[in-house]
Every structure is written in structure tokens, then in C-alpha cells.
Image (cartoon, rainbow, N blue to C red; front, side, top):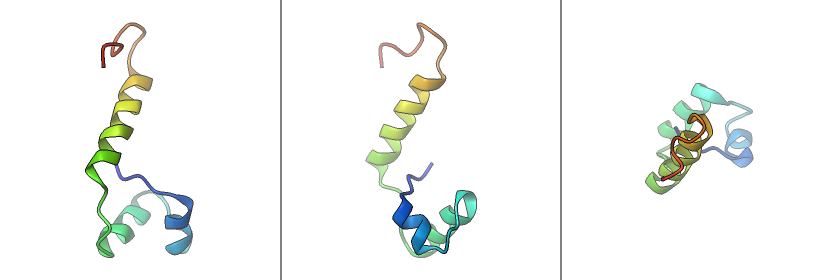
Amino acid sequence: MQPARTRDIDRHGGAYGPALQMAMFAEGAPPEPGAVEEFCGRLRHALSAPGEGSAN
């Protein structure tokens, strides 16, 4: 997972998804570990069954 913002999409000609990720990696813009962890935490919570993940 790599967080992307509208400015990232615009900078790469409207690319999104895997094409955007590849373009960002090619320019040397890997994801920030803290941003990835935060996103994964939100995703884990959103995808957990009711009652699961509430301790995280």
C-alpha cells in the first residue's frame, strides 16, 4: 500500500493504481512507513468483523 494524493496523480498524468505506484517508485518516492502503518490500521479496522480488532 502506498498512500497517493491528488497531486501525485496529477504529476503522473492521471495515472492511478499500479501504474501510479510504479511511477512513484521509479522517481524514488517510496511510501513512508508511518503512513503505510496508519493506513493498514484503518483498513484492518474497517475489514474486521464486529467485535474483532477493537483492541487495536
